[in-house]
Amino acid sequence: MSDIYLGLMSGTSMDGVDAVVVDFAQSPPKLLAHHQQAIPAQLLSQLHGLCSPAENELANMASASVAVAGLFADTANQAIQLAGLSADHITAIGSHGQTIRHFPELSFSLQIGSPSHIAVQSKIDVVADFRNKDMALGGQGAPLVPAFHQAMFSHPSEPRFILNIGGIANITALVPKQELLGYDTGPGNTLLDQHFKRYHPSGLDYDDNGDWGRSGTLIPRLLEQMLSDDYFSLSAPKSTGREYFHLAWLDSFLTQPEFSMASPEDIQCTLHHLTSQSIAQQLLSYEEGTVYLCGGGDNNGFLLALLAKALPKLTLSRTSALGIPEQALEAMAFAWLARCFVQRQTGNASSVTGASKPAILGGFYPAN
Image 1: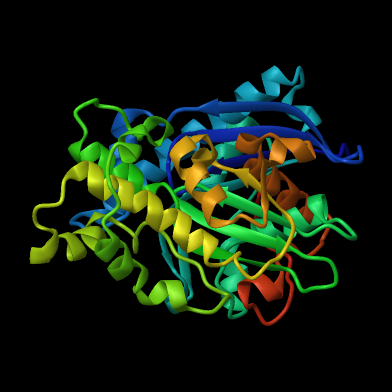
Image 2: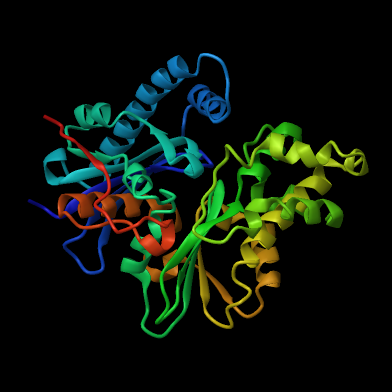
């Protein structure tokens, strides 16, 4: 059996499906190929709709799940081709699926993208459904990637913080001689993207480099009210999703009379400050270390400038400085989790998720 695995990931920002082929026989593991594929517009609209309550959800979810699986399998097959390999070289695929609901308070998290369909279409065994075992043990089911961060990036003397700014932002604190910590800080790109698409005439899906937000002016009172949301003061372990931080959440503030005349660009500027401040609040207690960024938000120059200003004691870098490209990191984590399953190793960290114990995560879906 080879030690080559494939990871599949689409995050809360839904900005594309990432597939990576990783050789774990090498130390550090070697990324053999990375392929990203956009989600077709019709499917993307369907997925956005499934993140909020609506009519006929089960039928919509069923068709979307099969479509997501087909997209995942196609992305995987292209990554294998890029690596110059065949399906026989891959021990297993680790598929995260596409999250459409995450309710840790109900011990429930739903990722669609039928693993059986992926297995049949790729001709490779699939490991999937990583979150629910952790939740069955009383955990949040998220974030799961910090255990991978610890395995890949821990340093004996240097404090390191891995900051993923996807739709939701999350951090992992790798501090020598301290317990592993990792949790969702709050919205990353999700409110920025949704507000941008609602008001900006460009037709783009995101605020390129944060330029539209940069053109606006901070609304301090709006920022203060948003940061007063209970989620930001919760202690870890904690996790959230776009089913919580969505346009209706934002509108609950904007409908107040004092903000009725706020311009869209001023709101966008304030949302950038919301993301940066909710992240910075979790890191201000650290006197030294490097923050390694990954996820789509690391391409937002305005957001990074706000973070650098808010965290003067810490150095900002990217995970590519540690040998793993920013856009490949999360998919690599799910290749690693698939390997943990195959080797009967635990994949969660109780200090991160709050589960009662470490556990082997995932379910197995054979190709044959």
